[in-house]
Image 1 (cartoon, protein in one colour):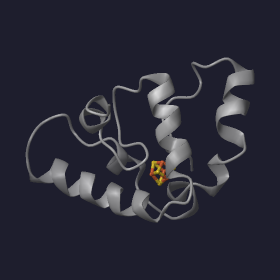
Image 2 (cartoon, rainbow, N blue to C red; image 1 turned 120 degrees about the vertical axis):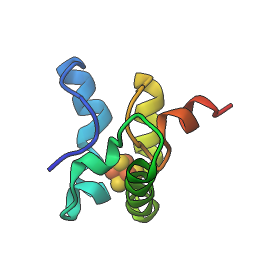
Image 3 (cartoon, helix red, strand yellow; image 1 turned 135 degrees about the vertical axis):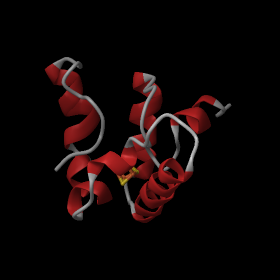
Image 4 (cartoon, rainbow, N blue to C red; image 1 turned 180 degrees about the horizontal axis):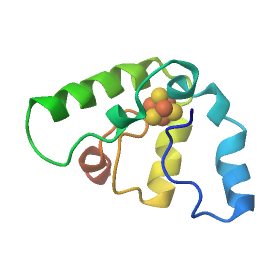
Length: 94
Ligand code: SF4
């Protein structure tokens, strides 16, 4: 179960380059977890914060979080938690 965004829109060579060397080491791919927690509702409220916190705990244990974040930044991902950061947190990066 891969939860790392929509890679299908990328050219195949780029999918291989960006993902295949590290994606199988992703914490979110190695444990039983609902992928929806990485895409919390786009509204304020406890359910969203609960999902964000649950996803961040998993990302915190992940050994490939730097690669995950790099891909999100490279793709300009507008949704989801990648590398332990929400979309709004990624937008605030220098
Ligand atoms: S940093 Fe989080 S979303 Fe990215 S691969 Fe690791 S567990 Fe999955």
